[in-house]
Length: 195
Image 1 (cartoon, rainbow, N blue to C red):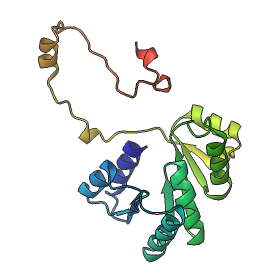
Image 2 (cartoon, rainbow, N blue to C red; image 1 turned 120 degrees about the vertical axis):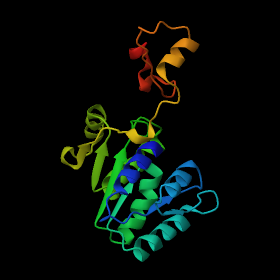
Image 3 (cartoon, one colour; image 1 turned 90 degrees about the vertical axis):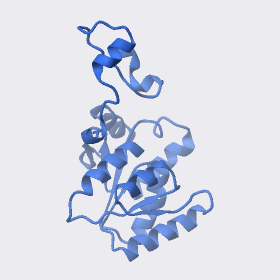
């Protein structure tokens, strides 16, 4: 989710007609990358603030900066940001779903997700058609969901080594094609299909 939020924000930052403001809940890697990209970030540290204090801080930022759209990436972010956005009378709340994790989780998380779907999400983005079908089965309205597949910032994905050098190091014939994948070693990533 962080990688996709970063790619989206970096792409949107090139549109001069948009004024972006990001709120993160920790001063970590995403905050650092966004700041380095020249995108303004407000940090509301979840380790030292209660949930209600975080909602209040988000609300103040939304009002002060006259924000029109809030886009969240996660169930906790949607509860806190969505609540603050409703209080601030924001024009639209968009929620990106990155996977089935919360929907397939314990009852507590499923309940929070149901609250998010009813009160704190005007439009939904699903990262796949399969996930969209799961969201519909869970009770989300079909016409509120748009599928936008994950993308990458091609200019930031550069090989660190020339293919011929790598093949030499690994003692692979130069005529052979190397295919690889990268991701967490969990079944949902589908590594079995490439293997």
